[in-house]
Image 1 (cartoon, rainbow, N blue to C red):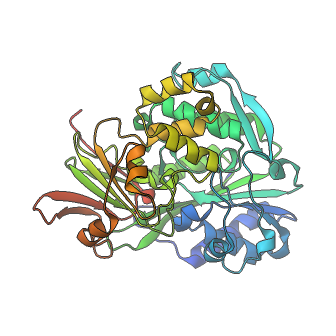
Image 2 (image 1 turned 120 degrees about the horizontal axis):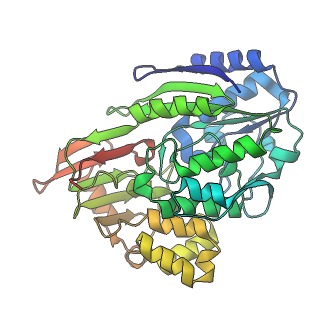
Image 3 (image 1 turned 60 degrees about the horizontal axis):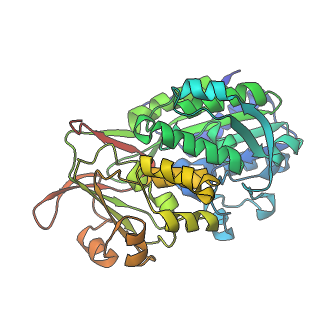
Length: 423
């Protein structure tokens, strides 16, 4: 098990040429594959530079790249315009959609005893390690997973083997992974590298993936107050240590400690990234460790038009709404439809402010009644967008028009915000 390339620091800023050279060094070490499968994220990870890495791999390897499968997880397939935007110049006939409910195989089962051990007894069901069948049966001699390590609500720090077991996983594995993490607790998970779910996925990698030619390229990205993006690190390898190196750097550049807990946070959801609360609730996930008790979060979502990207999940969000962890656990026990869709149940927990702060949701294409029905306070988007100029505001504290203070976040998907809330 090897790290083939590793560079990064809080002051590093990698260029496109740096990324190309890193890939050339990696292919020199492992040899150019004959049949490569690339696993980038989808457009919801637009700023990861995984799209650029995918394009560079295609330029370097040419027709040795036989398949490209965006690791959609439960997300909708990428339409042609999104493919063109994220993967310019790559022929569309190379892309394969991941169908998380149907097109998967089981590699093995993580035993319930191990799950119980790593969750401290809070969850004691076995976990199914599932992947898209193309990974097992595609005849590839390289499966190259490309993505960004960044704080994450389900696994603590995103990417690495999550891109495989969740990004190309099946409904059983995705449902259980999200729900066991929600039961364990989002506030004990956010920003942590070695979470219970990470240990479960690492177990699955160690026991069930020895025959898969997996290599990972992991970026660490920081957005500065002037909105410029800097690639602070790139780590390429096939082992756990490669991930933990990236996670350590991500914890330094993607977690912002706010000196005092803000009573009001305003978060903007870029229309190019967010069209659902399923994705847009990163505004809640990534700020919940910062907002003062009794405070308010205002979410500006011009393109938000639905709750779940999957029709079935959208229905469940509308039916049950965002609830506290204890309420959702009870609802799962009492309702077969929710128990059969545990990733949706987990999302209801993650999207709940746990009665600790108010969420004002200004969604461009959802009615006030729809917003109110899931437990949020509707906001007037046009008025709020005039009040908070997202084109000029920088991350940090500002004075509102009524003289109060608010904290603005340009893109909640790029980090995690924490404060001492006095708890």
